[in-house]
Amino acid sequence: MQVKLSQVVGKGYKTFWESKKRYRVLKGSRGSKKSKTTALWIIYNMMKHKESNTLVIRKVFNSLRDSCYSDLLWAIERLGVSHLWKSTKSPLELVYKPTGQKILFRGLDDPLKLTSITVEKGYLCWVWIEEAYELMSEDAFNKLDLSIRGKLPEHLWKQITFTFNPWNEKHWLKARFFDVEDEDILALTTTYKINEFLDDDDRKVFEKMKRDNPKRYRVEGEAEWGIAEGLIFENWEEKEFDYREISKRKGVVSRFGLDFGYTNDPSAFTGYLEDEKNKEIYVFDEFYKSGMLNDEIANQIKYMGYAKEEIIGDSSEQKSIEEIKRYGIRRIRPSVKGKDSVLHGIQLLQQYKIYIHPKCVNTITEFSSYIWDTKDNKALNKPVDAFNHIIDAMRYAIYKQPKKGIDVERLLKRGR
Image (cartoon, rainbow, N blue to C red; front, side, top):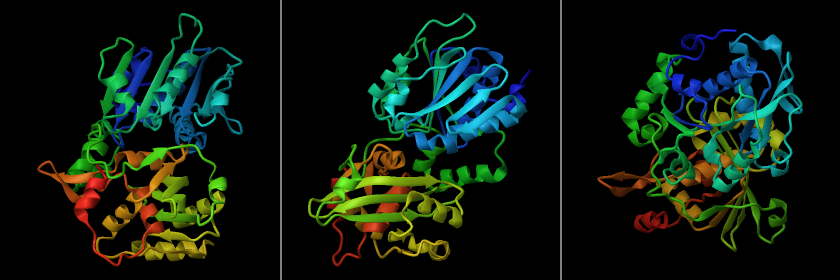
């Protein structure tokens, strides 16, 4: 089988495609085709190199089916080899029929399943870690790295591929792979500009972002590291907890919020517990996905078991709220908004110690990246409009119209 990269994969990934270094680390902007290229590489090379097997990793197992698994199915179809592969969802895996080679899927949220990985045919030699920024602990990666061991035949090699969107500059990925010179590391940055498969409308989105929100464009368009200075929230931590036990506390209430998106921004849903007496918030669930229609949002809420809960949605989407209500989410209602409601909502959330369950990876992403806008190196009294969809949903769920004005200076200082 022959693949012409310029037709199937496109340009910009020749070095990535040919590298056999142990670590291929790919930081890319939105629309940079990094995940699709990785999926094509895996399918093509597993068919080319008999006895090879691949392990695909994300922090949370349940996020794999709609991301890496779907990308690999797309790659199989694009290469015209669907008749040679078998796909199953339980267990989640792909099997190359002629040889029995497998692509396995695991989540770091179930470490026991990572310690007992075996393949029946050949060798486990390749690992793909998608959305690698979700791995907040370098130790978690080190344990995984050590598990890929054993002697391989000469035609195979051990390789771990990382793909991720830009993260703030304090993330361990930057220091470990981008700030060093190491013959075992290939560290690349790609952007949407090398994706010749984007159409004019796709490119206009980035051009508009570049014009209207240059700070967001720097991260999402140019794939530059996000700046960790000026974080709005520093009153949070990632923590394992049993929300059922916390919900038994006297005075603890559950809150659910929904922020609408579609093409460029995701629809974001959050579920958390508020302990007002002890000033604590426990974020225990989320969904975060682009391209969702209102019936799909309603079905997702039902699937998660929250159809009977009071849910506060973005009041600027009254039509969507009414449609979701007709789809069976009877207790959804619009948020309260007013002058400076964003700042008031931020101030309210800053008054709590916020614990985020490790499975809520998008919530962790936003709290790690939501920053104040600046001008002439001075913080403004408004946040950058990025990494805020879950946070907006949290504001909707807890916000009450304040009776007094807001102390902007105090608010800015809290987030530093």
